Length: 356
Ligand SMILES: [Mg+2]
Image 1: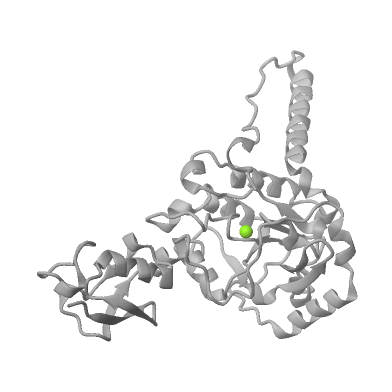
Image 2: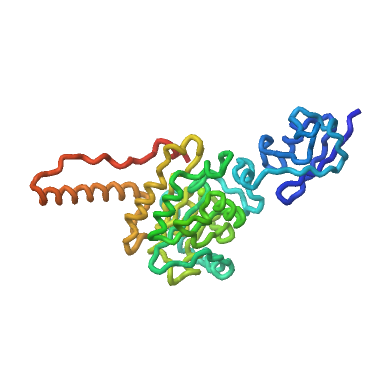
């Protein structure tokens, strides 16, 4: 006779009740229900204390054969790493679901100076606590980085976190660190930011240091006529916290979503999103090229005078200028123009991942 069965699944410090089971259900069915409740994919679930003939039961094994009492606690392992990488797991403490739209030209200007938003920024400056990991270094500029789709493909699944890491991440951060203090700002909770940075090996790297992390609590909501209320990352929070170190002239922010720098359009650079890591891992050179841009502009007095939309053009113009310069030097040196054409540095990798 079919018997009703209620199980408790313990995972990641929380308990999930799984009822409406019968002992005619299989392990596979149980795993599907656990997936719906926790977001941990069935193939990643390890149900530690379920044993059939001394082994972990296969998916077609019926619960009846395990002789479980109703209320039995199943210990599940799905490491945090896997949880982070799992496409269906999102932090539960996010303020709201953010749709995948973006801000068009011109829309950003009106919002930047609105008093009500500046008042919100002031409140963040007063109330948000920044845990400084590494203090600002004198004379350095500031680079603020988003995580998801900027440094990390958070929606793909992989065995190991670094498989989803954007190529050249550590090289990029190492190079940027020479001229810039580095801040990570992600629209998620601090716990997740810390875990991700640990996972990627960013938090304890020997060649660069992160100044601090900011989470969604440092963001503010603004109203746009077109999209309604959205969450943005106002750099004014950082500038207010560190008035002697950072300002609109020495700060640049990378994010794959333009609306995140709605309050500071002149300081934002929209990076091509890094998605489908498995397909694009081999070809994505965005960070490598952006590290050249950062280096190229690092000696400028006012970064906000640049139009970061044209960062690639800036780089190619600079390359051309350097080439001309070298040719002039060659000509004056030996009276003979150098005919050799240098190979063009990798041209833009628009092919792979510009699908937003
Ligand atoms: Mg992002």
